[in-house]
Each structure stands twice: as structure tokens, then as C-alpha cells.
Length: 195
Length: 204
Image 1 (tube, helix red, strand yellow):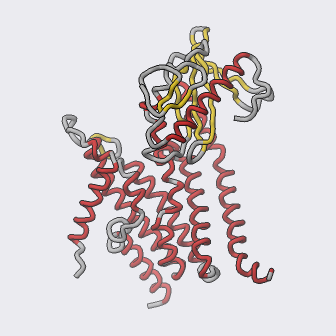
Image 2 (cartoon, helix red, strand yellow; image 1 turned 120 degrees about the horizontal axis):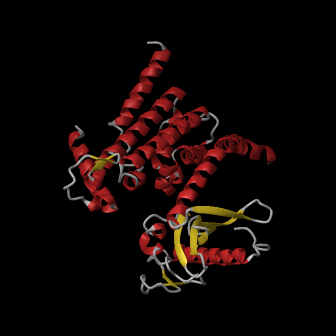
């Protein structure tokens, strides 16, 4: 029985090993470059979200391993904060960059750093029509509604038709990010786990 | 003719077939999804074409190398495994060296795994032909696919943006055809091109 099993599966097992090594090897070789590209994209995105900021200062976690958030500064004063927050979307992970004003009262804007949502549906989270709802929204728990006024700068975010899960995911991620940012800025990021 | 020369001849003939006579876009009508999705502009279209050529050639060669070892009832599994590995490699290469294009193409790069052309050629050619013929077949089909994408992208980008490769080619007063940016424009363009290619390649 075992012999027949091995005879059936040996090629699949062997190729999986070879291909696994190939993929791991390529990734290992390119990892540095890819990370650098991500960094550059992040810097550009932060500058686009908080154009008033002249410089960004990164605030790291207690162990120095992760960047908790970034402070945008100009003329010696704090212009705003930027935090990166990820979460599960419909298709894959969604990573957002969220900018909040200096007094942590209003969300200044959001940018989608990474997403693989369905083109034409969930993909619309990248569109200004959806994203602009966050600009000027209060930096508090936001809720998703099916219909409403997209222009109103309130706690309600109107979902994308046919992309409820993606819309829910974005609002959830923004809420998590804003909450984490408030907690971190208040001076206690201990106990905030993961991303 | 020596066997080597014969092989070369067969390989090159296979290459040329992929360009027009057996063009995946205009004759076989496979791989339609990226053909419609990424051809709004030339740059993403050619990037997709390049990625597919890379994966197709690697996959055809790998499948050809193991054709005597793969058991018939497992071939779909083995083909998909092979293709997935090479698409992952292609994805990393794009992320590292062409990050803006990688972002523009987005989910369509991992979707190359399910591109019918690649698994189709693995089944139709690479699993029953020698290394050289499989290599040239992959190259020919890949280039044929890229030519198809380029034809669509040229028409769509010129009409939708008045540009080609991002460079302006039509006078500024040109009224842009917005429909060419959308799926409807893609279908229209493809349909008309298919009609034209059928007309010129009427089966005798």
C-alpha cells in the first residue's frame, strides 16, 4: 500500500521541494529590493496625505522592531500623524495609510497601500469617491451604511454597491488604526498586539 | 537532414505558428481575461506580455523535461504546480524591478496562473514534445499573445488618451473616447479585431 502511494506521489513531492526552493531562493535574493520599493512608496504616500508636513519622524515600538506611527511636523509644530494599518479584506490583506490631524480630532485622509480586491467592485476602495468620505471624518468609531450622503463628513461611511465586505474591511481597518494611534500617542503602546 | 537540424526546423515552425496562424488572442481565443483587462495602455499590456512569455517558456521547458515522468491522471496537478511556481517568481521580479507596473497590474499577475494559454500549451505541446520544440512553442505563443495585447492596447490608448506609451501622439484638441478605458471599449475593440482577422484568414 505504501509502495503504491509513493509511486503515485513521488513526482509531486519532489517537484514541490524543488519549486519551493526556487521560490524561496528568488524571494531571498530580491527581498531587499522589494522592501526598499515599499519604503519609497510609503514615503511618497505619507507626503501626499500630509502635504503640510515638512518632515516625518518615525516613532518606534518599545523593542525598536516596528514603526508604530509617524509624526508629521512643520515649523516646529505637529501637523498630523500617519499610521499604517492592515486587516483582512475580501480577497486578501488590505493595508491602509491613515492620516489624522495634529489634535487627533479628524481623519485627514487615507491611502490604499496594498489590496487585491475584485476589480470593478472591491477595487473601488481606491477611488476618490469612496476614500474622500474619510477626509474630514471624525477620528472616532466609524460605521458602514448601505446608502446615504457620501458628502457628509460624519461617522457614517457609505459602502460600495456590490462590495460590502471590502467596504466593511476598510472601515474596520481605519477604526483599528485610529484607535491604535490615539493609544500610542497618548503614551502607552504596550499591550497593543500585532498589526 | 540531421536530427538536430530537423528539430531546429520544427521548433522554428512552431514559433512562427504562435505569432499568427495559431495566435492565442485572434485564433484560439484563449487568455481573454488579461487581454481585456490590462490593455487600456501600452506599458501594462507589454509588461503583462513579458511576464506571460517568461512563465510560458519556463513552464513549457519544465513540463517537457518531466513529460516522461508525469502520470496521466496527475498531469493537471503537476502543470498547475509548475505554473504557480514560475508565476510567483515572475511576481517577485516585477515587485523588485518594476514596482509601479506591479501595482498597476495588481491582481492580474497572480491570475497568470490560471491563464488558459499556459496550461493549454503544457497539455497540447510541452507534455508531448521535446525540449527545443516546447521552448520555441512557448516563445511563439507568448510573443503572439503579446502582439495581440499590443494591437488592442495601441488602439485603446490612442483613442482613450491620445497617447502611446504615455507620449502624446494626437493633437490636443482631440476629443478623448472614454469608452476605450472601460471594459465596453475593450470588448468592442477585440470584437472588431477578431472580425478583421477572420476576414483575412478565411479558412479555405
